[in-house]
Length: 225
Image: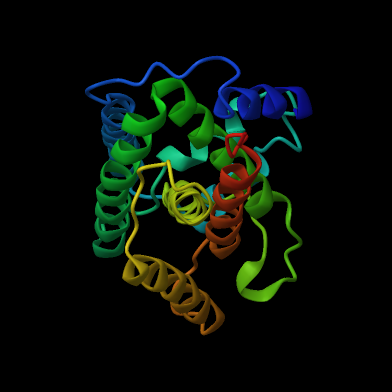
C-alpha cells in the first residue's frame, strides 16, 4: 500500500511526466462509470425490492478486513451513491458530478490526465480508509465500511486547488473564497445533520478528502530556483 501511494505521489510531482490534454477526458470517463454503476445499482435494488438492514450489515462486513487482497475496495466506494433514486440520492449525485466536472476539468487541463488520475486515486484511497477504519465511537465522525459517494474526492479537489492557489503563483488555478467558505460550511452542516440523527453522512471521508488534497498540493509543489 505504501509503495502504491509513493508511486502515485511521484506521478503527481511530475516524475513520470504530465501529458496535458487540450480536452480533458478522464472526468467524462468517471462520469460514465458513475452512470453505469448507478444503473446496475438501481436494477439490483428494484429486483430485490431494496436493501434491508440485514443486507446492509452483510455488505458492510464484506470489506478489506475479510478480503485483504481485494484492494479495489479502496476506490470503488466513490462510485456508489446510496438510495440514488430517492430525493437525497439524486441531490448527492448531481452535487458531486457538477463539482467533479468543474474542479476536475481545471486540474486535468493544467496538470494532465495521468497526474489528475493519480490525485483522484490518492484522495479516494485516503478518504475511504479514514471512513472505513475509524472507530465506531467517534459520534458524527464514526467509521463504517457501509458508505459511498464521490464527495470525499470532491473535497480533496477543493483542498488541492485551495493550497495550490495560495502557495504556487504559477499554477494558473483559481478558486473563489466564497467556494471555500461554502464547502467547509457544508461539511460542518453535514456533521450537524449526522449528530442530530437527521441524515447519516460519511463526514470523516469528507474531512479526510479535504486534508488529503491539501497535503498532496503541499508536498508536490514544484521546486523553486
